[in-house]
Length: 134
Image 1 (cartoon, rainbow, N blue to C red):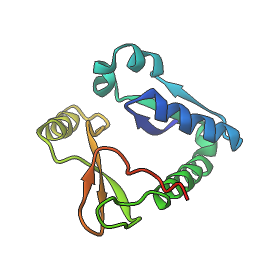
Image 2: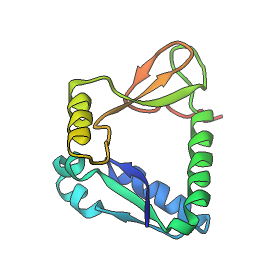
Image 3: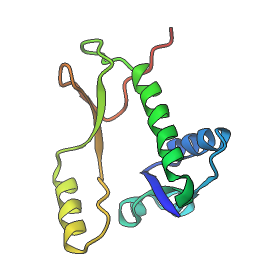
C-alpha cells in the first residue's frame, strides 16, 4: 500500500476519495477517524492519508494530477486574474520546526501549513481562490 496524499481535513479527503473511486481506482482513507475526532493530532500522525495499492499508484497519481489541474485552471487570482496558482509550504516557524523534527527523527515531513500563491503577481491565500462559475 502507498500513501498518495495526506489531508488535514476530512472534507477534501472524502471528495478526492470519491472522485478516485468513481474513476475505478480502489482506495481508502487511513487515520480519518483519529483526525476527525481530535484534529490537534493531525500533524502528529501525518494527517488523513489517501492510500492505494502499489500496482495502481501511477494511475492514481495521474488521476490526482488531472483533478488538481482541472480545479486550478478554473480558479482565478482575485488580484490579477491569472490561473497560474500553486500550493506551497507556508514560510512559518511551525513548518520549520516540523521539518527539523522530521529530519532529526527520520520521518516523513508533512508540512503543517500550506498556502496558495499566484505565480504571476505573488498573491497568497490559505484557501484556493473561488473557481469560475461561468
